[in-house]
Image 1 (tube, rainbow, N blue to C red):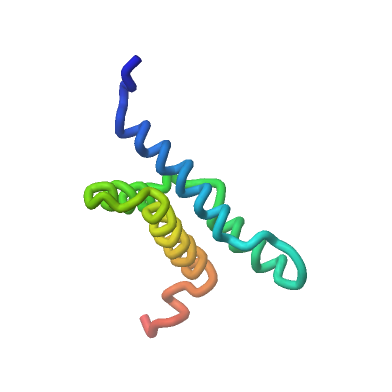
Image 2: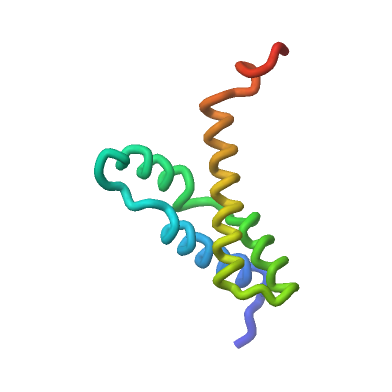
Length: 99
């Protein structure tokens, strides 16, 4: 049977791969660093469309980059995105500017 929506299928595959790569690279909470590791995992895992990661992986595929490498690059982009969201909550622009 043919997939009715190849884009949805590719996006779903990228979501799964990026989520797995993120899970592999983010530290497992333990010891004194557990609270920060838990916060990192909470902010990064378990949600979102992973569209940025999908775009990284699709772009890498155009240049025959191995999937394992593009997964890690996609995970890095998702980490930067998660950081930007958390930073806006913690440090709103109004607090940094004289507006």
